[in-house]
Image 1: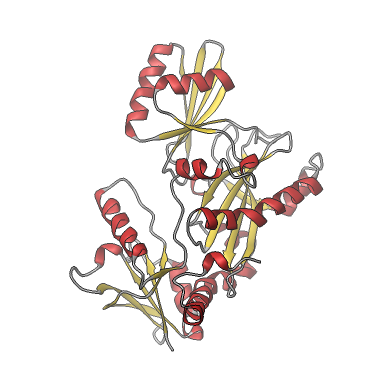
Image 2: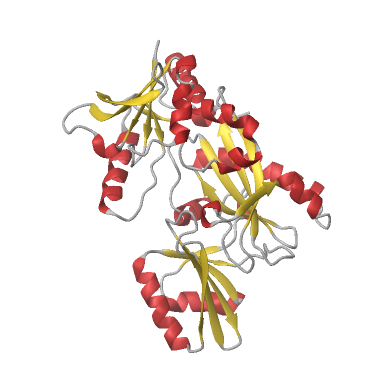
Length: 369
């Protein structure tokens, strides 16, 4: 029986190498692979205009086809109208009983925190997070901690993140635009409040105390761990690496120019950390977090988990991404690329087999080891 797997992307004409590499392996999994935008569904029908991977010619061919029963969501949304329309269509698809997604995604950062902060298994690792409802709330937190981070509730790739630091009677603001660090000092509290007022009207922001994750070269760093489900529906760690940003900067996102290095190398360079303790804590967290997320929200397929290791050896969950990038594997673990490309095909087969045998819609959350 041939399996049909569709990849959802807002720009199917930009046929990413990752999608093609999956297509190159689709035949051995007995899978027809499709690529389309949610905006290309044909109104009033079960059909969609997109692309099918031709395993003979090893290329994508345009065609019209029925919406595949299994979908892999790789849509990244902006604030434009097309993104808003696509998000609504994907939400509708996720409600359909005849369609199964490899992963159903996670809510925004604010809802994620609100739902996890009372779970005793995860709450000790979550930095206190509150909504920036108005300039007064931001100023109150800044007076309490002297240094805070302002981040968009729906942010990604380090976009529109601001570091605020109180130095005497002045307030220093740092952000990154087009890969460059930009700083501005406000000596007047009124001018700073007016600037805040403008920023807060553009989108919803969250406030967190800035954690001490700076190395001896004054570079911010964090630990990215990439998890993915295998052919049996079990979570596996695929890679981990240390992301390091620019000196005196605020971001560790690779899309913002941060470098990535092997976790083992970092351990050798930081003998002053108790690595036995850190690894025990990280292992315990990673063993629980995916299952807590699935119990609390929806079935998932892959996760990028960003952890801050502070100078006092405390561990904090900085971010959780259900649509992680793959530079970590391609740069540090190229020998695992085949496994990465095959993972969506193998997990789709697992879901299909499990549903035929158990008759349930999506068994993802039940596959716990």
